[in-house]
Length: 153
Image 1 (cartoon, rainbow, N blue to C red):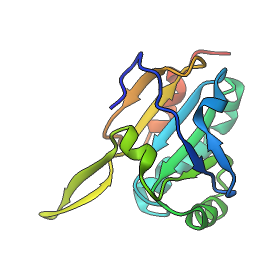
Image 2 (image 1 turned 135 degrees about the vertical axis):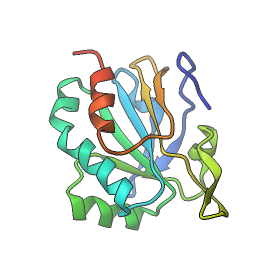
Image 3 (image 1 turned 90 degrees about the horizontal axis):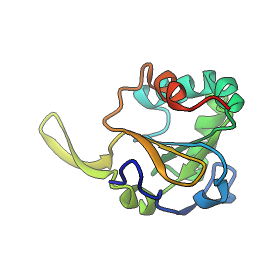
């Protein structure tokens, strides 16, 4: 997993609009890259809506919020519309970026093992380096914690 000080692994993925986005194209700005398991599930909705509600504060720092999951562009479009999410969702159906960030892991629920996304957030500085990592995120209150870590513009 990339650690603070490391150059953020670059990737190009389709956004919820279907257009490709390359992470390195956002150099010069703070980037919040938050990985979540699945659109429209309880924890993921809580996390997305908390980021949504703080967008004006993130905008004031010129930070870009990117949500990433293995869901499809179509799934992201529905999720974004349903909760009026004003930031970009990235579709990593092939799990290329998720694996590059070491977030596609074996998980266990009720004794059943399966592969899934480990809910993690990376704060990437304007130079493209990892500034901070939050692992095994609890969704409630997380967006405010991330916001507090970004220096005032």
